[in-house]
Image (cartoon, rainbow, N blue to C red; front, side, top):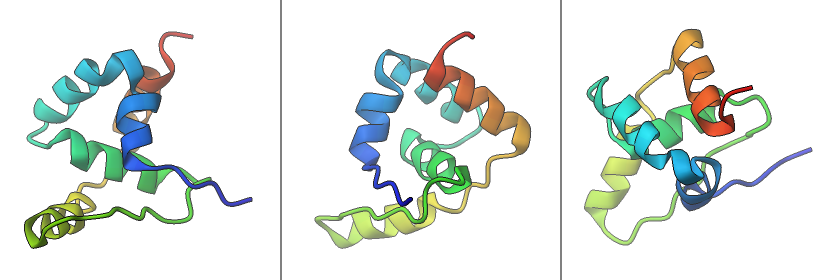
Length: 87
């Protein structure tokens, strides 16, 4: 089964009220929330690919560069807990 998730959906939906926590998480590691969204999606086994639109060459470059952050297993677990909340 292939699932399509938009980056806007990740930022506004999955992170929801935890968007500030996501911004703090990524910022504390020298990354942006965009990079976090890309790297989190790329680590999820149910996501086949990340397709991001761009309205300018700069945005396309930023999108391409965002995929460069590889979340560690520990970081992935931490982001998952931010997204899902305490269990």
